[in-house]
Length: 278
Image: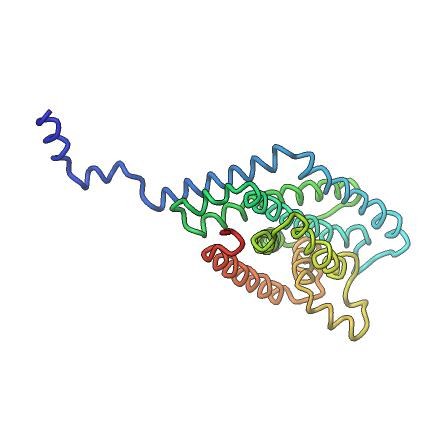
């Protein structure tokens, strides 16, 4: 027995440390676990997360693209159906990223298993990144589905693929972060529906999804420039069609500013435990 204790005591601490996972590796495992759980949640209830937006956007294509579009004619050199496709794809991504993270994170608060995350040694940025990654994944899946449906109604050619992809990722991240902040302050399930209904949806309709803001007269054209969704929609439209109502570099500045600001606010709230600790 003494020999056994001596053998254990003679182990080099440096060698023993080789068996301990590094902090970075532990954080990656935690990040992967949260992201996998969020992805599994989206795919497990796919009839609620993926099918409804596909049906809704199909109705938009039929009503606005076919019925109304045949009367509108062309817009900026494209058929009306082609013109509204980028806006509808971005709108579906925005709505689904926002709703996914609000329902998921608030559900963790309601089920009180968020306390396990708070008690764990994982840093706040891991928790935030995991939830945001799950929301972005759902947004991308919905965006791909909506874009595939659009191809049954019209033809599209990506004018600037890199701009289209980066705009989708930035836009999805922005509204995932905004949804996370909403979920932190929400105290009831009704609270997570207030922002999408009274703020997000009106801004989406007034963000140039169905029209060019250049058609608006003053002062409505200037007022529209305050709407952040206008920049997301037009940047993606530029990536798909090559036309935009605003300079693309301005849209990127707005999107990056929102990502930085919302991420900083979300991390600050998470570190302080706002809405999480009773």
